[in-house]
Length: 309
Image (cartoon, rainbow, N blue to C red; front, side):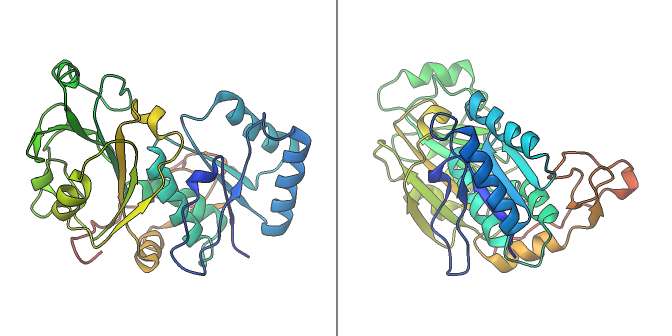
């Protein structure tokens, strides 16, 4: 029986990559569903699947997050994992789909839940913005703020795995400026686009807002050497997250389930000293307890290389 994956917004559920990838359950906000109904729905999921991994953004409304913790508390269950992620909306949607793919593999629910932290390091999530004046998710210099007021300004921003910000020139190329721009750029990792890209094979998911530009598909995608570009709808929370509706959000990710499987399987598994569930990494995905002894922490996984993850 696969581990159930749940989300707090329907637009975080991307179309499946194959016929085997299951969908995700929707955990509705308090103003959309009474607590009694939410408790019944969660209890049904737990009875059917055994374990539920609920993924929600750090930007979620306080009342919605409180509802999730209330459900877990009232059901007195340790089989519900609440994963709070500080990723851009499209990056969360990509990670949710990867967890959905892993949920039908021969991994325990604890491994699936704790794999979220591992896989987030391999998601390059960013956006092309017309302004950074209201951007508070990535550090922005005063110089970049001033340039935001210039007509026609565009900025390439990477929020994960490391923050970067560049100003896009009128010719469509990135001029390094701001935070982390150009730092640690290696050959074949997207130096031509100004934003440091992944050094391993990825595909690019693009969510278009109201900004008109081909920089993401014509400049960034070739520089990052992605194997394919997919388009999707922009998550409803994206304009608020990025501080503007005039934007194009993107996320580069590992698309192959066999690569995801090998990546997760290569990490040493441990037993949580608190709840006893299986985990990878240094923290339990269900109770959030850290590993107690340093010698029990898993070694870092190998670096993925361009073209051959």
